[in-house]
Length: 282
Image (cartoon, rainbow, N blue to C red; front, side):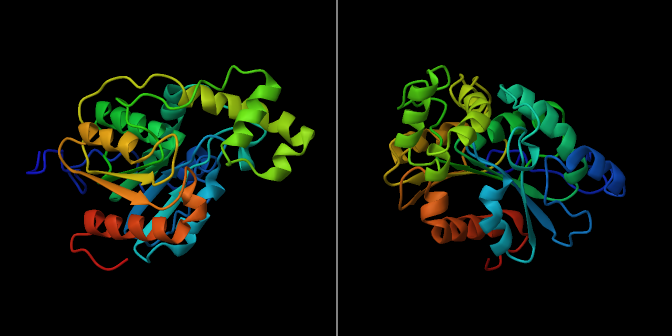
């Protein structure tokens, strides 16, 4: 433990690295579906794995990836049932996602990394860290959580995933996160509904209690977010074990889209201060 109250991740010869970086074929076979933009030859010294919101895919983080500083390899994660994995059945539990994801990530935990979870992705990121800790695998040096209430905060919306189809889509429309072309197209709705229901089933489950997370936590809250505003996000401090920062971003639940530049600047500056030995400008 260090003076901030979290376990300092270990890297180098004494670390229990999850998979040899010299096995590019293993990386390709196990990881390509989950990390569609991964490049085994990437020269960046650090990684940031990004987990999307309900219904979102890896492309949601392409702005972060394209604008990342030269030292940071931003790796959006692709869950089954969407985008490049549309033909696969969606997973319905956080535990199932994390179990498969850890196997895919193992060869990529060969350098210091952080995690970013947006809305549902925040829930998955928390569970992923708990799994990594149980398995004595490398841990992130920073966790970014955005737009998801803390485990001790009550939900501000009624359950969604069991609603009849018409009511389900009406509620989604009210959240202002679903493209209008999807809402207007019955064929697209029929295609996407199983994946969306599975995602909301995960998002609406209980989050089990756990010991404080073994890394610093930065929580992002939209100033106008009706589901995970600053008050709802402040409770993540109890999960952080002493090193916590709450950052407000102008916007509602999807400030990742509506205030992207501000959000990216906050992420990159804090990633630099936590990931690099001597912080540099992002």
